[in-house]
Length: 210
Image (cartoon, rainbow, N blue to C red; front, side, top):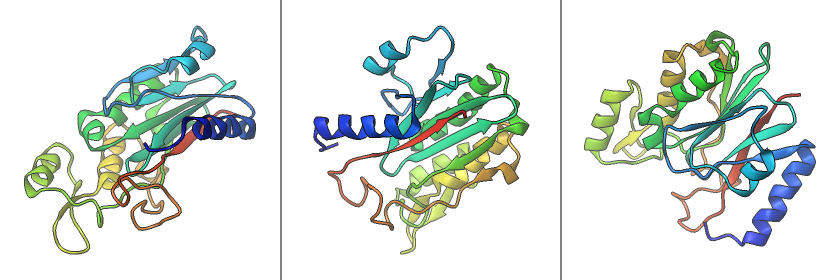
């Protein structure tokens, strides 16, 4: 958003060099759709023509999965024993529509077990900063318990991280295996934040098997 395509491509190439493998993305649309990158998936074609979805899963070790955020939640998941990883973009709409349970289900389709999955929620807007109308907070809370919150200045807000933890635990993950203490993108200027600066870049959350 507002960045130069050449710089984006250069940064993506740097990420591939750092990870020593191809990195695949999706065209994020705030959905609950998941792309499975399996043995039959043409990685070159997927890289050139990202599919419209908001999560990816794979059991392949020759690719890394990446999602892009600038306040939404980057959620990275791994079942090390089964050798399955996932990456999800969890904005408010996708979270409420079930993107995280859908990602866990797709990982299970590749042999993962929900109780063995570890998840980490990366830098994202926190409940102290994500102000929303009261009606939206109440409607969201009715769908995912614990997502309703209050800003640091006393107005209605959403705690997407708490909502994500609740969704993951409901999908079968052990709460002790979910890390959700990353910095807030609005509060920490080391990260891009669309809510703090409407014209901004995005940063990637990426995961890969050894």
